[in-house]
Amino acid sequence: MIISMRLHSTKEEIEQVCERIRDFGYKIHAIEGEERVVIGAVGTGDTTACLESVEAMPQVEKAVRISAPYKFVSREYRSERTRVRVDGCEIGGDEFVVMAGPCSVESEKQIMQAAEGVARAGAKLLRGGAFKPRTSPYDFQGMEEEGLKLLAKAKRATGLAIITEVMSDRDVDLVADYADVLQIGARNMQNFALLKTLGKCSRPVLLKRGMSSTIKELLMSAEYVVAHGNPNVILCERGIRTFETVTRNTCDIVAVAVLNELTHLPVILDPSHATGKRSLVPALGRAAVAIGADGLIVEVHPAPEKAMSDGAQSLDMPQFQAMMRSLGPYIDLWKESRVTEAAAAV
Ligand code: PEP
Ligand code: MN
Image 1 (cartoon, rainbow, N blue to C red):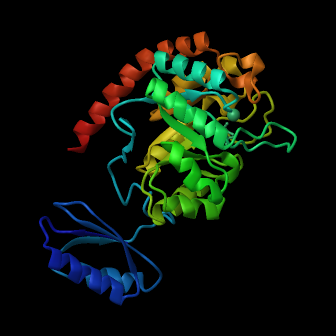
Image 2 (cartoon, protein in one colour; image 1 turned 180 degrees about the vertical axis):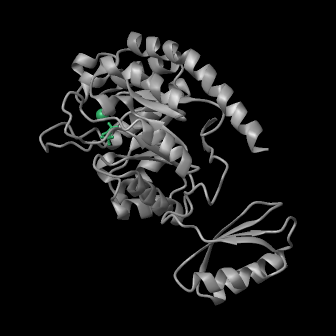
């Protein structure tokens, strides 16, 4: 349930309403807003009776049931976009944000070259996996804490914020010591122990869509993190598995627009894993801007032919620079549409 209070309600009035909600067996999850306070309540009970009772209170403007099973991430709960602040930039705000870097951190030289190159081309965050989820146990598993230290060094050298994957709830504190954003990979989208732990973490989370997950399941996973206390979640479409084999995955590009209707959380696209082929990455990147994504996460490697993972889908530096240039006119239109949207909202 969402309960909107009248403008300038007092603390006592808000507390009276909360008391009434609790009497019906619901828990107050969040109280948001300063001038106009919105109360979010969760639990099971007689919702109709509770809504009627609360709505009859003079200080309440409106009380509504949220129909979607995901509540706090829904657009019904919050109509304006969530802006996730990351070390000087904002995802979900007025800028289209590009995150770029290699699939895996492999060596100091590799990550420093990658960081300098992507920073020069206009990326705001450096990606790079230190803990790698690999299909085969014999494949490179990542440099782990050593890799995190190299990412921190690249951050010091370039000023780029760091996004890196965490695979286990045991590693959340360790990864959060080095990273600005914690990435949850497709294979872990429904690792509920991990999602709950991330709810207690102070770092923003990038949640990638599972390769066989529906949009609703993605939103339910985001709901886990938010309901457990962390509102800073960014969603990522990275392609899903279909019968098509020409591309590594099938990019559900319209998922970006669907998510923009269903949730206030920022949505970015990963054109690298969505295609598996570097030749297709720039075109899909432009499509992401055009459809209203908030950013991209792209694999870029100083020498893709030597990459220890995902070389075939990684751009080299000149290709990444060219892609960034080709996004320019699309980003100009994107900015205009954000301004129009903001004007329509007031
Ligand atoms: C990655 O970003 O390198 C990765 C493993 O992505 P995904 O979880 O989407 O497969
Ligand atoms: Mn990868």
